[in-house]
Image (cartoon, rainbow over all chains, first blue to last red; front, side, top):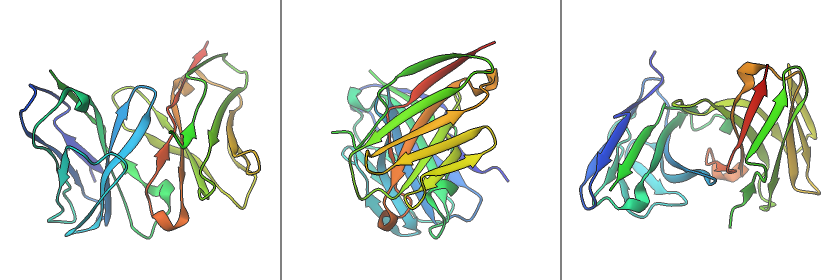
Length: 114
Length: 113
């Protein structure tokens, strides 16, 4: 049972490049979400999904796309990277019927956009 | 404007003493509050939570206090241990918002041996 996995661990992009941050979980969780962590700002919700085929926006969705074709995977796409997207990105998952404290976070992806 | 605030970015405490971390919130719809602990290069891990119907919840060395009228919660760690050195995030959720969490900015705790 690997829990929540994220790839890559580190990534450097040039402004305007695109990339996909991968997130996978093997706990059969319905709920998955993406957060970004910036100094002094804590973690802010980007997008979330309550099940395959269903996604919705969080607090800071601009510049990011998501899709949920399977229960296990929830990739985050940056179509045209900007320096403001330099951050650490965390994926999380839980059962939809579970309490908020039953969320599991991945180890994070540190992204730098130059 | 941040709905959850941790006004102390850092805290240094001697091993064996009490660590007190504070958190304030502005959204009166929040009804569930959590503390997460984060080590470098790892994701946050759940530490302790409290529902708005309670004013205290204890789990071993960790106790969370909630003052709804003041929109304030605090985390007490007694006694503090060097392994407690980490960043602590306060978070809150609304009952009808599912598992969406609103986080504070974090407090870095250093426990000196």
